[in-house]
Length: 475
Image 1 (spheres, rainbow, N blue to C red):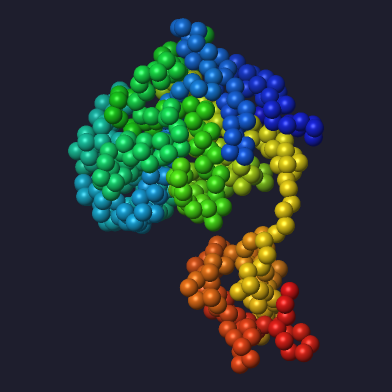
Image 2 (spheres, helix red, strand yellow; image 1 turned 45 degrees about the vertical axis):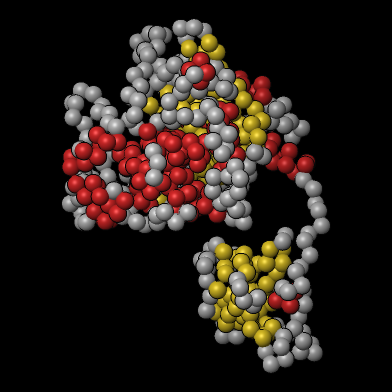
């Protein structure tokens, strides 16, 4: 599917007809009952469409409020809950699973101790655990409540060495759901509702649609294999697959979820109606485990990255009998797409197409709306720090600059940077944020005259370059 190009005078709303036409062709080509789609830009659902039917029997059409089973997109909520608990001090990502779930000691690991299975490895699918719960019915998939699953962990194996490769595990996420219950001291479903969906106003996102939501629920259909008739899907029984694939949601709600994921500025703190600080969102989205040899996909903490040309889209898909889904977004652009299908079709393909088609229009809109306010003045206490510093042994160095309201350490060309400097209690000491030197200290040193003359950056000594006259340079 080729995104094509739209005229420079178009905006996303103006291109709605083309978006709808391509999406309609997608629905027809794959023979699905219906689909609901949306594009999120600058924190808003700027375009949405419903195509086909949410329910063939009644003729009810699909729209942005139609509720679908979103399957494995649920994992992004589970991962968020884990990171919330980490940020609150309830656990560490490198804690062994057995520290929070002693029953996991029954799992058979021929590669080493069960302490090698950590929370982090469950999040990024490198635990090595088998993908699905034990199957005790040869002709059907076996579903378990979490209580039933814990009772059969003796039948579970670690299939490949932990940390050796990416191996997707639905089972692993079900165990994470139980970790959340024990650390938070309340049921997994209650925690997700109270700590994530309710603060974001996601009123259609739930594990068990009830009341008015039942009237908006899409019916799941399987493929039309031998005729145009679509078979009704068999959903897992209530209480199973809660943490790995149990949520229902709508385009309208998932637009809020995508908008939340685009708050990745590391300076943004978690506030009211926010689920994580910006640095934690960025940490979750950062691809760290390469999935395929071509580096087209890589896994992060719950989210994964898909590389398309010069773009890396962050997202997650969902697939379950009768439903296919995908959310994808470009966090730095503030642009994302949602595709929910009640049928079997490659939702990810359409979501990526929508983003690629909308991106130039979005960028043009952002450029047209951009204002250029006066930059913040340099704080008086930091003005004397600005300037160039050189390593006397190597000859290269860095500059200390004030740009767009931040104090930056900018290494010479060829070194990675710039690095944002976070102030510490000592007014001449800072902590480097991001990059190779992240977490290390930068210390400014005064000479006998009282002026700042030296810099110690992560162990590298540098001397302040002085202009003629011997006084420190002010840039």
